[in-house]
Structures are given as C-alpha cells and as structure tokens.
Image 1: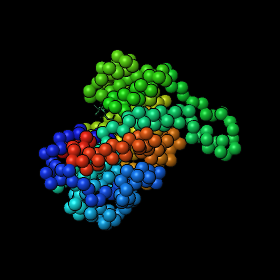
Image 2: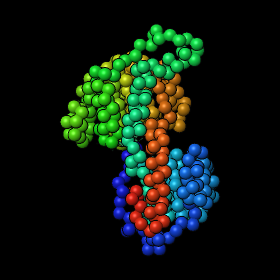
Image 3: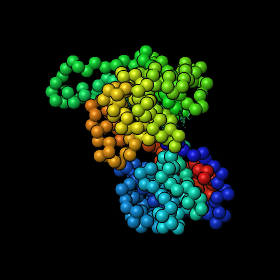
Length: 337
Ligand code: NAD
C-alpha cells in the first residue's frame, strides 16, 4: 500500500492541543502476542479487538484523545462524527486508504501512519510463495502427510538462469531484484519511473510491459493499485505470457483480472502457476473460491507484511508518533492531506 508523505504539522495543530497529554488511549486490533508491548508502554490503555462493531468502537473511543488502528478497522466520516474528543489517529500501516483523511483534517485530527516497516519482508514473501509453487512444496507436504514419501511427479523449476519480470521497481521491487540477483536470475523491469541504479548494480533491464510479459518465466507485481492500472493484467496480457510461467502478486488484487487469470491457468495463455498474497475482494470468499481451489494456485491471506521485525517496527513507529504528540511535537509520521 502506498503511503502518503510525512507533512507539516504545526498549521494543523491548534495551540490548545500543543503540549496536551491525552486523557485516554485506545489500541484496536492488537494480537495477543503484542498485548504486553502496548500495555507496558501505555499502562491504562484500552484494547479493542479488530472485529469490534462500530457501536463498540464508539463506546470504547468516546473519551479517547488517541486511537491506534490498523487497515482492518476503517475510520470513515460517520464514525469520526461520533468521536468528538479524538485528536490523534495512528494507523500501524503504510497505507491510509481506510481513513477519511480530509474528514480528519476538517476536525483537526492528526493522522499518522508507518511510512516504512521494512520492504524486505514483502520481498522475502515473494520468494516464499514462488519457491513453494516451483518446488511443489504444498503438494509434497500433503503427499508425505498422507504417508507417501515419493518425489516422482513433483519435478520443480530452478530459478537460476530464469528470467524474472518485476512490475514496479520501488521499495519492494528493488528488494525483489536484490534477492533475484542472488538466485542468479536475469532481471527485467517495468516502471513508470525507471531506476538507473538497478540497471547498473544488478543488470536489470527496463523494457515495455509487453516485452516483460512475453520474456519472463516469473512475473511479479509491485505497483500500487491506481485507477490507471486496474486489471493491468487482463486476458490480453495473459495471452502474451509464457505458458510455463509463474505470476506472483503481493501488491494489490485489483491489478489482476481474476476471471481472466483463471481462464489463463486453464490453458488460455500463461501463466501455469499463480501465487497470490492479495485478491480482488479479499473478504468475498465465494467470488474467489474457484481461484483459491485451483491446483496450481497458492494463496496466502495478505500476510506478506507480517513478520517479527516488521510488526515490531509498526508498533515502535506508532508509539513514537503518540509520544511525540503527547510532548507537543510534530509527529514524524503525520500525513499531508
Ligand atoms: P513504492 O511506491 O516504493 O513503489 C511502487 C513503484 O511502482 C514505483 O516505482 C512506481 O513508479 C511504480 N508504478 C506505479 N504505477 C505503475 C504502473 N502502472 N506500472 C508500473 N510501475 C508503476 O511502493 P512499495 O513500497 O514498493 O509497494 C508496492 C505495493 O506493494 C504497494 O503499493 C502495495 O500495494 C503493496 N504492498 C503489499 C503488502 C502486503 O502485505 N502484501 C505490503 C506492503 C505493500
């Protein structure tokens, strides 16, 4: 998820607010393993589960100056209308799509996010997904669990010498390039703003999208979801891909036309495999059922961001924003509206 840039703060922070200590802090959607981290830092904090209803959120946050939320719990205008005391809203995510930032600005609510919790963790997940498919790990595991310790029929695809096409060579794409280079892969890239350093340091070659699709054994998506790139990979794009290729999507589900992907997997072009951490509508289980059930599809539940060090960084950055705000300073992670 693309995050906004940190921004000027003083103009949006009233004199009344500066230096004021919060009377109440609420953290929403904290996993059990992180509870102590939060309660040690802010004794007296109220914790609210991620599946709390709007009514429960309003009740728990009615007296709160500070709320820390996550992408799973949106803060839109109707909810903000019911929280007149709210002054600081911190999301422990890069993206702020789930927060009505203009409505917050109107109400003088400062919104903070976590600009970077480590792009390497998403890049590592790309290779976890990719290797699980090309080395047939889910099938092998199922086979062994069923008592059949036999490698026949599970021939894999080596990565060394294969071509990877990286669509979007920003923070995550760059980390993917680094790992792919380590595997001895040939690197192709497509980006609206090419990065010359990648060409020099890793021999990545920028090419038009069509060329990337038709020459890559692995296509991995790292562009943000925008109106312009909705269904960037559609039926026509899949026709250009190699049949024996793998699509990796850890960016956003809307970049891919899932009906066209299902048709492509069935032989109407490439890829042969799809490994996905994101889906078009992640809560619509039925709409995605055929894709999820496909034998050459591996899906993880939007988990690429979620590791030990990234989770800690999300909390630490959020704590820093709260403490800076409590001290009357401009939180380093305040967003520009
Ligand atoms: P970034 O802003 O650093 O890089 C994005 C790159 O994509 C930029 O270089 C940009 O020029 C390029 N780009 C934009 N539109 C493009 C297009 N139509 N075609 C080709 N390139 C295009 O972002 P990032 O931090 O690398 O994140 C990439 C995406 O990964 C995010 O936008 C988000 O959707 C996704 N993401 C997923 C997870 C997860 O857990 N699965 C976690 C974080 C981010």
